[in-house]
Image 1 (cartoon, rainbow, N blue to C red):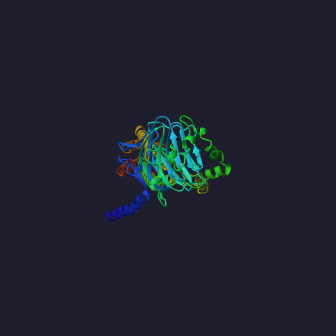
Image 2: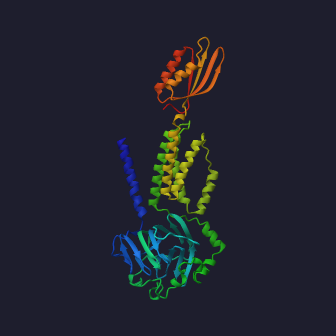
Image 3: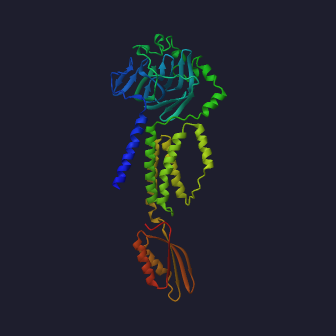
Length: 468
């Protein structure tokens, strides 16, 4: 057994080490513990208590050149205006995710001007509150998540290839923390001399524009307090030029959001732990007459499978429709004998769906609340525990036993007794009971005492769910 455990431990280590290494990928991270910002061009930016802070008109640019990126960070804002997280920033242009209390849109800037790729009408973000941002770019498709909820999806038919990461403020006071960028390094980073010089905002001052001319960012960006419908004239053609074909192509795009392996591992481990806890609850507190241990063994596989499926299809309409088609062909034919079994199956599926959608806190909290409710229900109804054996007794003349004698014996040794059937004539007595024994010794003593009542008594025990 010890040797088997060691082999299993070595196997886990062999699997986890390369998996974690792959999950990290190429890129960089910054928790802003270095107040000098050695890898940044950040005029007007400060670092306080491990947080990068930008005031109105300030910017912070990280040197590098990345493509197919997954960008994750936390941000907080205050004031009136906009904050922008720019990526693929270089001479050819940039992408910018703009946010504010009444602002949420994705823009693209090139030498030809600014166009809005996607926006959310009347989007409301709470100021002075930390918000988790995740930007995923793959094959020209951009997906933006706030607090793990998909907010924007856009596909650029003529995408920018690579570039750096930059933050800038248009009227807001911004705070950033826990920056992570995963992606593929470009063929060569843009020389530092081509980046904006210190003291110049590349999106507000003409001489610092990445295209070498006056940037139309200020003219094209919505004014403070306005929605994105009032963007500049250069943005309107891109919004209205989307045809029905491009919309349908974007809607049914088969490219799902790549799930990073760290998130996948965490969710799968949590699914296994939650399923194990749920199986223990069902085994010890369930009231089903079937073999609860064998049935509970299915919770683990069901929860993990559901989590895996939701992680794969959560951001792809095409895969979601494919899942519906697959389930219509592969039908579940397992017989569910009691409503309680169906309830626990739905609970396991619900846990898998919640973890698959990265709702970890809510899912685990629901599991705890569910266990508390099940435990309280079990405690309050403890006296009504189900019996686990069918007992049939038959006694014939002349040594016929009375029903009161049989009940007296059963009450002394059974934790639960329930009369199901009773037939009596002048020559025969037949009775059927549901009884519960906590130990096998109780059954043997009961049998001996019933035999003592009459040598000719007939006793039959039929197992319902096993003696505990």
